[in-house]
Length: 211
Image (cartoon, rainbow, N blue to C red):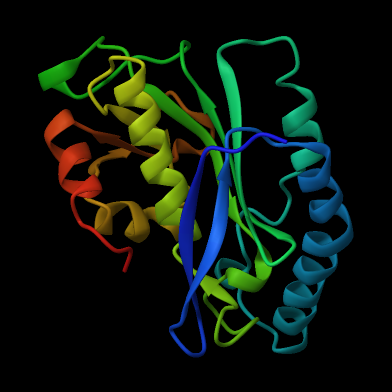
């Protein structure tokens, strides 16, 4: 089993810190969890929204993501890496990063290498919203994003990372200190693009405990 480091999540109800594992791979156990636990929880969320006649913008924008396909498409590609967070016998978050295909867009570091965050998602029971209130665990998203920064440092990219954000997640990346570059006309659906300079990356790492 792949293992990167011990991390801590925070219970959404009590605020208690709980030991978790940050793993440097997405393994079959994570995909089994996604299929047998994430998908039913996702469907529960969607049913709650449908029963409440919620507007389209209230629906989780990552609900259609298929992590089985995303993991399968990584096979044989050295530039792509998966990471996962596991806690109390369940996968709590997943991320896929690209170490080679993208370059920085900010003028101050244009064309420099970076770690590009292809996809990042937390388990549905950790979503903040009317679905599970309070969420089971917090901090999974911050931990995965910090792992992307640390991998960037390991790759001698100086902490530079970039990503295209679903609109619902944009405020999260702003809180993490990334630069909001606005909608990207060269990307499907004009999703907003975010990027971190080395200074922003270090400030994010130095925040200490996740918020």
